[in-house]
Length: 116
Length: 116
Image (cartoon, rainbow over all chains, first blue to last red; front, side):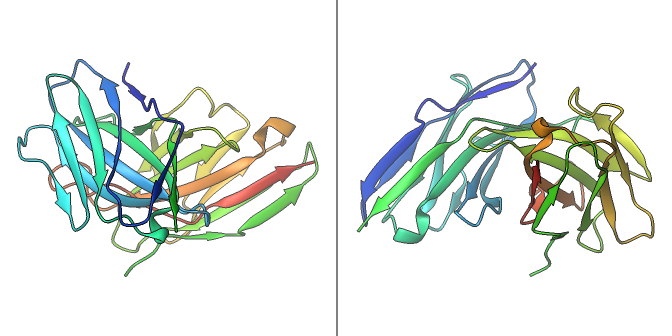
């Protein structure tokens, strides 16, 4: 069974600083997807960034980038030039690449506070 | 940008009552999901649905739960006899494709279910 672990329950950084959220996962699969979802106080789940395991290049979306280390099963999220609107719960998530199993497995989340 | 719409945003029900949570997925999406998040805990998979049948369900999704796509646009989750522990945020999600070019699900804003 796949598991996703986020070891930082809560973090706080000053506005404009860079912050890195950690995530590790456990799987025996070779092909899979990894995601970071953001959940602001409104509670909606918003996809921040995705990574396909067969791609070595780290995904980047504007101020958000990942450090994907497949051998180490690590998938950290870096937020550059953090903004007050980045305050949210961030979930790391895993999904197998297969025919029958398309559920997403979420970690427990990291609550990120961006301080003015 | 297309959205997944969930109604109601908040529902309060008495223990033992039946409740139906409604979702309108994005119109060209073919795969549908329900997840739930008990307050302060991680997001958990309930069920996936494709081609008018359940693709996969978790152990949480017992006989008290059912899903239906009654009219080609709505996707509903029914809980037959609610229990206090069913109190949670319920998220509907949909996706267009599952694997090649998969961009993750689009989640709705959730329905907060409170069982009293």
